[in-house]
Image 1 (cartoon, one colour):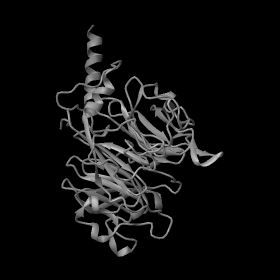
Image 2 (image 1 turned 120 degrees about the vertical axis):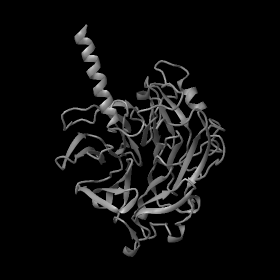
Image 3 (image 1 turned 135 degrees about the vertical axis):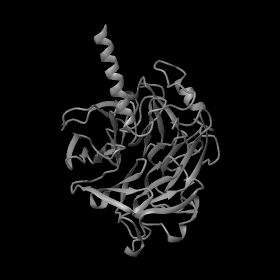
Image 4 (image 1 turned 45 degrees about the vertical axis):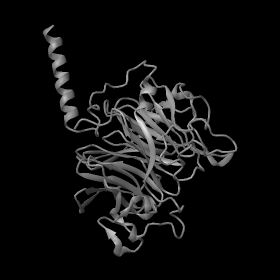
Length: 406
C-alpha cells in the first residue's frame, strides 16, 4: 500500500513538472467553468457547435491571386503597413497563429515576410521583406516563409527558400538567430517548437524531422509520408500528429490521393514508416459525417490543431472543408467549403448558416471557405482559418464558454 502511494505521488510530481515547464504550447488548462469533452458522449459535437457564432474576415483584401514563381508574385505594398488588415493584399499566406495578447502572426509566403495584425485590426510587417528590394528588409531576410510557430517570447519561422529555421524575439525583431539550416528541406510547412526552444519538429516533404539544441543535431524522426502538411503536438500527451497531403494522382495530375493523418508515438528514431493512421481513408471523398475518422476521405488534408476541450480540427486544401475529430475518433463536418468560393463568402453570417444547402447550380451557398492551408485556435477559443489563393484570414468567433485560464 505504501509503495503504491509513493508511486502515485512520484507520478503526480513528474506530471506537474512536465506540464509546468511549458514543454507543450498553451492548452494545459481548460476554459473557465468547462469540463473536457467526454468519451462516448453523443452530444460532444453539438456542444462544440454551440460554442461558435459568425464567420468574418480579419486580414486580406482577397482581390489578387499570386504565384511565388512568377513575376508579380508578391502583392504586398509598403502602404499597407499601418492600415486595416482587411485592406491589405496578402501573398499566399500559409499559417496564422495568435499570441497571448491577441496579435495575429501571418506567414505570408510570397511576400517573403511575416506580417502581424494587432488587436485593433491594424497590419504591419513583423519580419522579412516588405518588397523584393533588399533595402526594405525588416530584421532577418526571409525567403518563402512557409511555416510559423509561437512561444511566449519568440516567433519561429520555417524559411523554405533557404532551408532554415529562424527564431525572432517578439519584442525586438533585430534580436534574431538562424537556429540551423537543412539543405535538404523541401516542401516544408509544418513547424512546432517546445516552449523552451530546446526541441523543434518540422516537415520536409516525406520526412518529419527533429532538431535538438543540446547537440545541434537534425534527425529524421519519421519517414514514409507522401507530402507532409502541418503538424501538431497533443498538449496532453506530447504525441505528434501529422497531416499528409498525399501524392499526385497519375490518372489526374490536378488531384492527389492517399491523403491521411498520422499519429507518431515517441520511439527510438528513425522510424521507417509514417506512423499510425488515425484519420482519412486515402480516397478523396467517401464516408459521411459522424463516421469513424479512418473511413472518411480527406481531399488534400493540410491543417491540424487540437481543441483544448478535446479532439482536434482538420482542414483540407482542395476539399476546402474543416472537420472535427472527437476523442472517440468519430469525425464530423464542422464547416463546409468549396475551392471556388469567393474569398469573403458569407462574411458576417453564422458559420453554419445555409449548411448543407449547396446545389449544383449554386455551389457557393453555405460553403464559406476555399483552399484552406491552416487552422489555429487562440486563447479565447476563436478559430482562425488561413485560406484561399487570393490570401485571406477568416475568423469563427467563440461566443459561449470561451477563454483559457492563464
